[in-house]
Length: 430
Image (cartoon, rainbow, N blue to C red; front, side):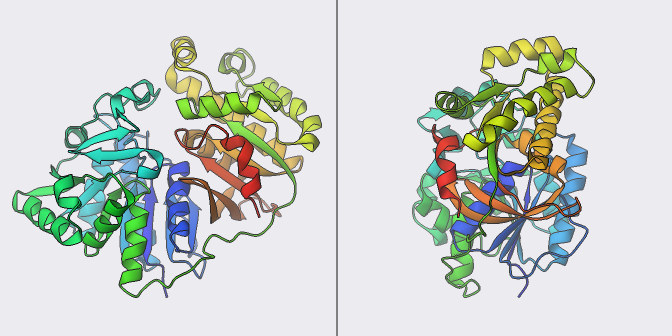
């Protein structure tokens, strides 16, 4: 049987987040790095294509997403999800609207939803406003994001600035009454010529009912929380058997390390927690810029520092900084240049650590994870069990490098994970 669900994710950690949620809910899942040039592996219920399109120019994001959609259609998928971050990372000129519009048009869909809610991580939507914990999105720290500052929590307004389609809302009053009432709300939005509706969701029960309501929609868009409802929907339709081992992974031997490029508040706390008990090396983009064009001096220094420490446990190599430090670095180097310098340096460090025998890596940050995966030549990931909501362990399916060893990778979105994430994750490996 071909896969049931095909997903297009706008960054690497977001793809892993979704694939992990699907595996947790009984769907055998794999993540492909970019649009593959080969057919998908056999025996999968869901395939997630990971793109690096969150902050690329909109036209590039649309082209890459349409190519991923065509590959997933050729693989036989029957329903599709465009996955973006549960904090709706996107500016008024961002990519969520243009990509959603293009995917809908390609599928001939007259209506879809946008629901980035992920209650397990504190992301809820009420009356169209996105909350992070107890505060509005624009008060959560996301207003200081270096690439996609979120200054408005009203998702209807944010998406309407991006989309050519009319954006509507399905309120909690309808969602709380179940799938039938949600579908009636869909019909009411359609009658008002709404193309995409923001859907409120405050708990996992809401997401399950939303999934049932979306059974006939060719495309849905949102966060990984939608996986709860979509998997349950396939099971209710008799298409997905119960499977308690969808996330089983093989054992991987070898040294371990943590690489962190995210500057989110959650990752700052995780870095602080690990620094208190483990050796840590800070990568400063200003030092990279002052050295050679590719920062080889800093890369070599970090690797030489790490190698004698690997036998004692995972060391931490990080570029994580607080908002004030980030602003100072961006003013000196420029936001784009600073980001590229960090990504390239951390990716080069990861490559050299793997060459030296590291086989288990935690990588924090979507852009950093994308750079590391590309540097390692990884072409696919089999999704394992969850470490924290939205973050599973994975094992590489293949690599562009000849005779590349299998690796265990945990690709963590900057905003996800408890403060002790870097410390406890190793106990979740098989």
